[in-house]
Length: 280
Image (tube, rainbow, N blue to C red; front, side, top):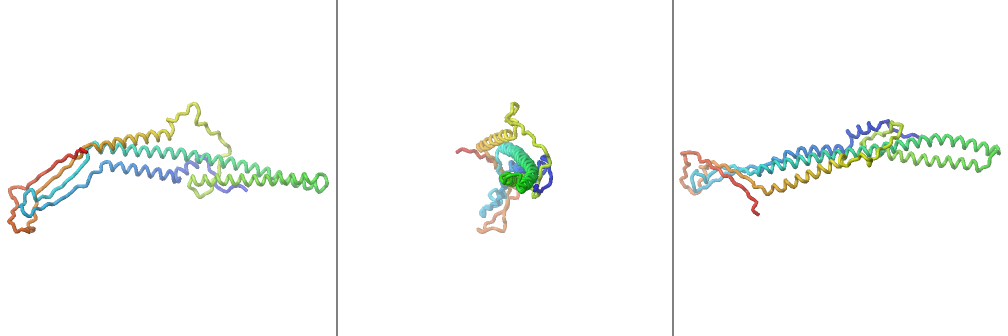
């Protein structure tokens, strides 16, 4: 019996895998994640808000509402941004390697199934010939024109052909299941093409590994690692901090019963700029 399934060309299999294959979908999600993570390059520390009140002094600079912000040295953000962009490019190259390997696996399973289905059709035609041969041998034996050995030989050849048909069909079904898993499809697929093609030798004279998807991925990965090293070295850069203060007073809070008057000649405003240096 023939294998069930819908006829598809190899290109149609490639197109279906492009939409449904789980590895490709996961690869695209990794690219999206890396792209989103590029925004984290400009992440700064949280802004600290503090309200300090000295109960023994008036509304001078000891009593202040302060805002403090720490930032890395500007070159740190630029270096981190370049590193994350290199990671995104590496993920794109990795997806290219996955696509190339997937197409190779699909083509291998497709043409292996095509080969087995061709063999199965040949064996099926041969089976009809052997059936006819057994009928003729049986009639010749009953008519006394041939010995029983001829009939036994015909039956043996037919049984061997049946066994070979079962093996070939089983192998074709295995390749069909493999192809369905690569396409992430629950519908059986049959090759619509009728001729096997010669696969070009990748080690031909004009072959260059540097032009392959795998080489591109390795180069992008090395570039990403180099950027990561540079980003780590920016840890030696100083950090900056800025604090702004304005005078404040909680008039209702006077635990020592001291007459504290707010300075009314102006609103004190102060600032502090700091530099963090990695001495150790």
